[in-house]
Length: 149
Ligand SMILES: [Cu+2]
Image (tube, rainbow, N blue to C red):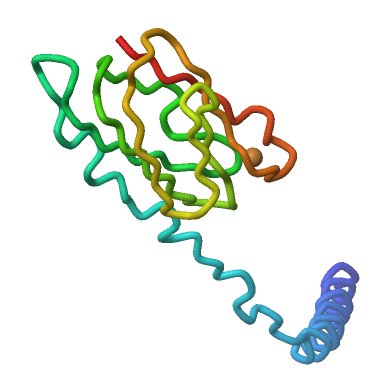
């Protein structure tokens, strides 16, 4: 009997506490409103169409259109190969950030988005290209080479 009484008291205590807790919890706010459905979709939607159009299999003297995509902080093509004598048209596409594209050996310097430059690749060998707009922390890493063979 003694034990039963204790159990009943305990049960009552639990009930009371449970009720109190229930009241407390019912006043809790539901703060799960949608934060952060940020969408990163759709940057870099491909614009590489037309790259390498008109590649001349016989080598040299053809015309070659190349689209270079720039983002923070790299070009999508660190190495470009053309044939000596090719007429090369380069289009700079700033997919992210604002960058330039310069080949000093060929006096090429594109500084606007979707700007183009055309030159005849008459000097064989490797020629450096780099970003020509100071674009931020990784600017100096934006280098590559055009190989005229
Ligand atoms: Cu830059």
